[in-house]
Length: 393
Ligand SMILES: Nc1ncnc2c1ncn2[C@@H]1O[C@H](COP(=O)(O)OP(=O)(O)OP(=O)(O)O)[C@@H](O)[C@H]1O
Ligand SMILES: [Mg+2]
Image (cartoon, rainbow, N blue to C red; front, side, top):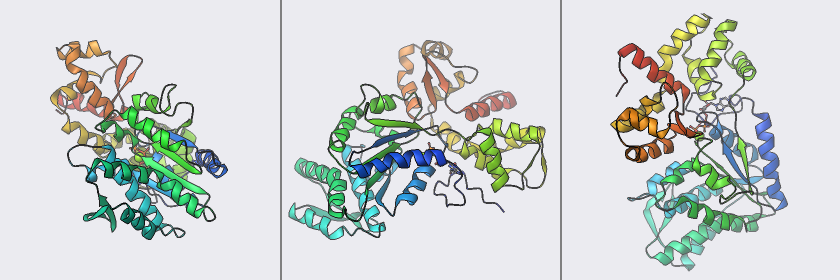
């Protein structure tokens, strides 16, 4: 009966993955260009929970027979991090993800060749650092680092050239791209470096995505006029489910939910068509009971802690100043100077906090005004205040 995916499951099977036919064909059509040698680069944007990761994994599954498809989640760079997040954490993850994709593919057997390369270059291996039996070379000198970087970045082309009779190209999905903002170097110089490597490659397609606000500086660093990929990257926004899509989705997958018309309108209004919220909230609703507007409102209140678990976790980790900045924005968006006034500090004193909150996609800057990014999170804060007389600091 209950075939709605969990809100945190982005590896959906064919029966769970709904719709997105337009998005899929658009992206596939563009990736097909990889066959024609020009290297397409795509930036998939969209708000948190809209289904970017689910979509990438779906496309990966669809194309796995024709392409070598690499999916890398940049948040996994953390495991290579000693004290700082560096370019080499990225390179190691790229390498690991690449080898894993080769191992999982039926077409490519790459291990021996790679090992031979490392032997000829005198790399040493660290078995302890090995991930899923993929040995990671130990890098000691600066020279090792640059040899490894060159090797890793050119690996896709090398594999394609070796297997061009077997595959149409190599596709590389980089998810959680926003994490690059934490790099211990100017993210722009890193982006330009990637771009310089990518542009000479043929039959290799790259898709970047992650939780970024549409107004994020990183997006203009990547795709803007002066951005590293400016003019050469396709920026495609994944949209929320429409009212009609959400309706047919639930009719099909959760026919046991008995909405009245008003009840459904309220449900859509609460979840804003964001699949993460649609699935999470729908799974919490009682089956075979009439769901009118009033019922949805009260169920929504009860469900908020579950819907917002990812954000409340972040909330309790914030500093007092960061929390106060957010609560200052509950009623309406404000300019920096207005926030500072509310907090009784100078405008300069909140710069770092604003930056961090933006980087965590908790707030965004829109036409000179800061606003809370997630409207459901804003609702939660508002309700806490109304019920308890204060915010949950
Ligand atoms: N096409 C779909 N059909 C059904 N459910 C979906 C679909 N796409 C996404 N979902 C649901 O939404 C949830 C969130 O999707 P996903 O993790 O892909 O979002 P995201 O855009 O990558 O979010 P984030 O920005 O936080 O990484 C999934 O776990 C799943 O429950
Ligand atoms: Mg995601």
